[in-house]
Length: 354
Image 1 (cartoon, rainbow, N blue to C red):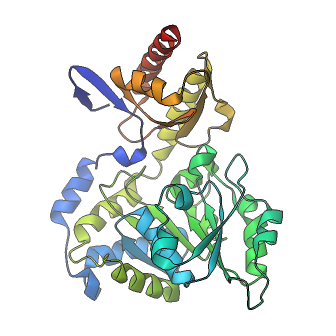
Image 2: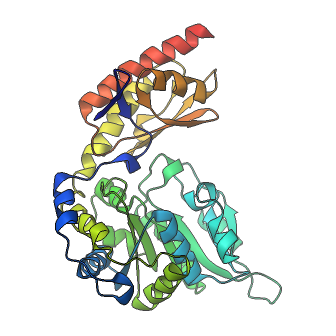
């Protein structure tokens, strides 16, 4: 990768949030036409919101500072205090967003099991919908994540999602897609992002992950929904002023960075194949669909192996018995091969030390 420390070259596979903006993005940021976005007068933000809505097949868009904020304003726009959202137990909004929907919105998250790819079963969704009686919380929203982080970055197809979104819509319940890596899913499946978001009433996607922007995410939906989400954004302190310096990079990303996500997917598959050949590391390359690779470590705790990797220059996130690797802009095939050599060395050293 592009960094080094103490004469050790660093290959950072912790997350695609580590991407650096492209030279074209930096130029666009410097030259962006600006206005006050809270007044709706930043022309660059307005263009980004229009482009984002078009790409997702929605009426309107809203720029927010992060995917977590996008999810939170979406939840606040759909659900009120005492309401309930049906969501997979391994969803990012439950595991990695600090309980924000419950803490700040007073909204319950009703967790149902995910399958290996992060999908919810139609039966589980149907059974989780509350009866319309006065002593039950109101089921306000069905929540899907695509790609699914803890599902090894699985790209969920329209047909997969329809099986559960149709149930929700049949009961008058809206659907939200946490599409932080929606364009990864679209590229992997070979379909427009608008096809994937067509099953939902609202969708978020990140600019700052695989699309390589320095900051920002988008929320898209109907004009009425975006009006409510905009109010929630303001309430959370997310009303920005000359936000065109953020939006300018986003416009470049949506024009130039979507198709290249396929390179990240190829590199993730390459990484998974190499890891699958190492003793004590379990991963099935056939399950790697996008840019996320989870492996299970046998024997010693995974953080111990991750620490040995870090000492040798390869960074990855770990917990319990798993390690997660994420490929992204700035990581190429040569980096993957070098990382595999380092991980192999760290694995041997960890095993011998035990």
